[in-house]
Image (cartoon, rainbow, N blue to C red; front, side, top):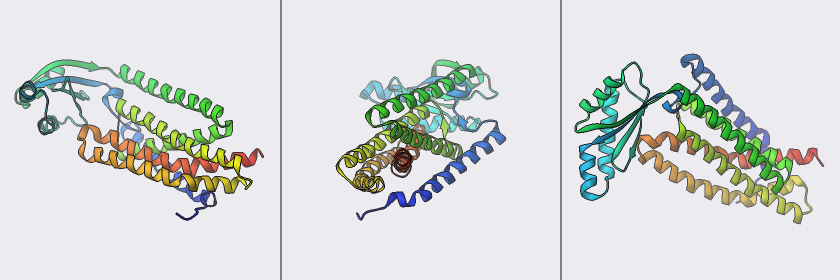
Length: 304
């Protein structure tokens, strides 16, 4: 790979990010005007109903073979989604619990608990309800506050860690890159109507960790080159980015291939989770090179 002068094109990198973030902010505003919420919030945040459902076919297979085959799991989840969809119940969070029971979470809408229970037991052959829980809006508000608090605490800890490992301005550059990644992820979340639930929060924090790891690898190479080279800061940062580019491409590509496979073949319950990770990890790999490093260069120039 020939030498690439990354810092020469900084205005283009910043411009691209500004456009994507702007589209995301516009989507959030539009969603809020049209629906009263900037995001497609799951029942973890809005409140709803949670059922654990047993189905004879899955129970019998598990008792016979000691496992539930992917073929049977896919068949039954498709039936469940179809039955609920016919009654106007969409955006169902559907997972397997206790190895062969099915967990269903969805907004209660205008139907009573008894009506919802009847839809499940009469529409899904051989089904029985094992448990029912109501998730109140107050629980959703508490989860939102916790998600914001966790993100804030993570940012502060990263700021302290990077300051001790490198320097304060490196920490600021890394945090700016993280904020960039977060804005791109939540903006495209609004645009693509990805469901925001507790799994999404986990994906968001995973993206933050992945992004900061990539940034630290690059910053570490910059620090070592600054010690050994007498060239200008501009040339050293460009050199360091070229040296780490191949590693970044390989690492990101292998990660994304796995996530794309999960998105395509992992079933409906994993699609939004995988898509959030695909967007966030792509943004994280981009920002480590094209956002964090240019900001580090600017901060070093200001403090020379």
